[in-house]
Length: 272
Image (tube, rainbow, N blue to C red; front, top):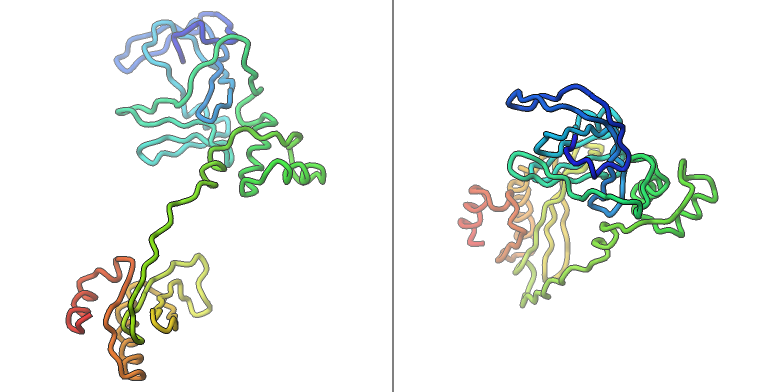
């Protein structure tokens, strides 16, 4: 619903009854039509079934109506996203207790508009682009020629912010130099998991210990992340007994399994 008559690209005027606001104030509906929107990704879409309500104070989009047309939406508390399949068609950052649509209205005849939200050729191509791990135009053209992309007839891709961001490089970490003079002077440890599929013995995690001097590695699988401390104590006893040397420094990524009180207590007792 909108009070702006000049926003409509097409409008059928009629007496459509009244809409009651939150304070039970009735606002008369004077027509229904189509409004063109330029969304967050630069795509221009047609929003159909828009009510023209002159006395309305805010522009409103019904999520229930979008959901009935096959769209889905979810929010992380900061931004609301409306999706059609895998394609994000609308974004709305939270402003107070409302979500404000990220985009603008388009008036005039200069812009080329897709026929319907979520069904245009460009949208279909973009959807396949995302499904195939952001494949390039040449790769999509080859698949279209083989008739493997259902519904796709063109391979012209619009701007994709995810492709641009994905090609950016991160600043490298500084090279760390450890002056280790013997085995077990400096040991690296990390925990990985959980896996989606368990091992044959039902294990979802593993913990590694890597000696910085010799680069020898030990890997132990675990059913639960809480097994790290007991595995570390068993491994420590074994390697110290076999080598006749003591572990001096244990380095981790400060994961919760290493920063727990029991683990700190063990390190303090063992002089680590």
